[in-house]
Length: 74
Image (cartoon, rainbow, N blue to C red; front, side, top):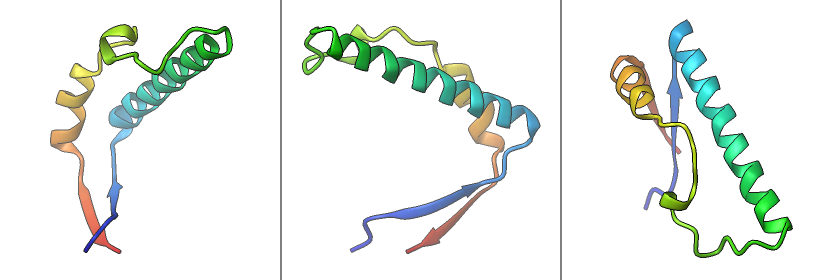
């Protein structure tokens, strides 16, 4: 049974910038959740509706159809 799969992306310059922006937003969101937890706010029952983050819809539509994806089974 295969449990993991390696995927290598070869994004162009524009896609690289979108990936970096998404990772920056992700890190910011995680840091805010950690800060909330440290300050005593219960985050165990939070859902995506409770988290304010930039929309990645345009990222998903613009990046993935054009990326070259190579799969390698482990």
